[in-house]
Image (cartoon, rainbow, N blue to C red):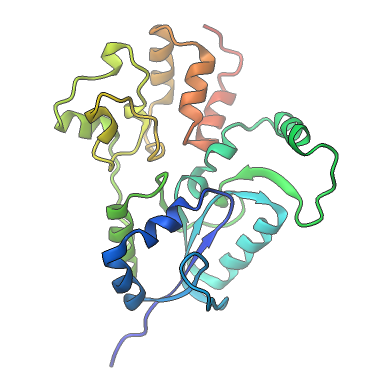
Length: 260
C-alpha cells in the first residue's frame, strides 16, 4: 500500500523571497519535488493553494507586522513541523540587525511620518522563533540548492536535516587559499556557516557572512582581532550585522560601551 505523501506549505513573510525563488530555480528537480510531496501552499509557484493542516511548513522571512505574526501563529497551529527557511526566518536578517526599539521607532517615523496603518500595524522585525516553536533551522541568504535538496529529501523520509557545522574558514583551507584576515582584510569566514564552498575567498573577495553565523562562532575574538587591525567599531558592526540579525545585535548590546 502506497504511503501518503507529506503535505507541505512554503510561506513568505518579510524578506526578499530569495529562498522561495531558490526552490523554483531548482528547475530539473522541481517536478520531482512536486511529485514527491503534496505542495499545499506555495504562492510563488501555484495558484490553487489550500490552507489546511500540514506535515511540514517552510517559513521564509522575519515577522515585521502584526498580520504576519497572526499568520505565523496560524501556520504553527496547523503544522506538525516548522522549518525556519533562510537567514531572515532564522535570525531576523538585515531588517532585524539592531535591537534598539527607540531607533526602530525613529526610523519608522522618518520613513512613514505620522500616517496611520490601516492594513497591518508594523512591529520591530524578529526571527520566527521569537513567536513560535521552530523545529529545524535552514540558514542562508538564500539557502543553497544542495542544502535545500538534502534537507527536503531527509524530511520526506522522517529524518532531521544534517547541516554543516564548521565555518567557511575550513572550506577556505581545503582550497589552500591565503587567509584574507592575515592580509588585514575584513573577512567573516571564522564566523560564517560553511557550505558555500568558500566561493568568495576563492576569488580573493572577503566573506560577508551570507550563510549565517555558526553556532560556535567566537564573536568576541573576531571583534577584538578586527579592532586590533585598525577597523573602526562602526565598520565592524555594519559588516557583522549584514546577515546575522538578532544574533549580532545581542552580541553588540554587551559591547555597546566598549571603545577602541
